[in-house]
Image 1: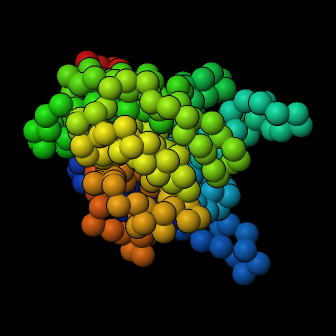
Image 2: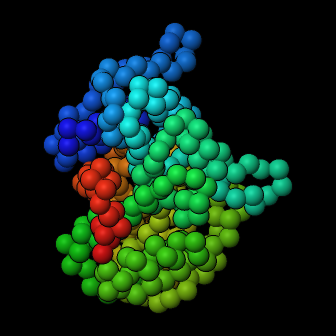
Image 3: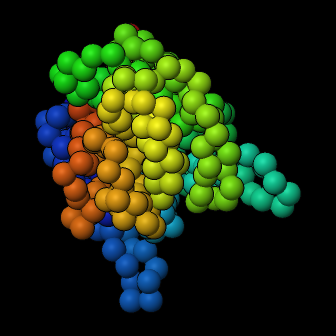
Length: 312
């Protein structure tokens, strides 16, 4: 492991420290700050010549700053003769703009993929992408992890009976199936219509949820409107309890205010792919760490071992 180096920007240093603890390696030192006018300043304070370097940086809010930090760090490492540079992005920002579904809109996920490649990234390690096809936007290897195992371990300890796994839209069916299979549970789909970018209207539920303990699964929660509507619809259809397991807790805008007012949601479990600010911490919010999962993936990539076997 003497050829392995771990760096981090300012996006989520706590997660980087946990990963280093799992790997039993020190966190390499780098200066990541700003000049007086606001431009990002980076200096790598460690010799990386010939090293296998991993930069841990979710492009979480503020996404523009965290993305630019990552790009500039990668450029600095490339110019410092690192043997290989892997961008570890537990949360891949700009993933929701992954297709041209309206006239005159960008495909920003592809743009970010291009930026990472041009900056000097040799490999990307990410988790629960908003859309699986984003992997195809890269011309470099992408290792795509899934947090399902972390959430399954947590919910299995509850010994819940009559469990139904629900997905908030058709796009999440594949994820929901993975949870349902591991929990030996039934599956339900919530059909919804989106009225605007931050408001949805639930239509109807496909599946039996009456007197069931429902777990809603999804990859991302932003403003929380979809989740709140889904919880209300499930309770209306007779669900006994409703919980949620969502990988990336962006929790932007009025999300926390909406969740505070939602009296039917028993618990919301999220991962620590994104840091949770102190002012957003609540009793109903359970944060599960994915540091060991990411650490094991980094170790396997470094030793040229299979990453997909993590999900066998």
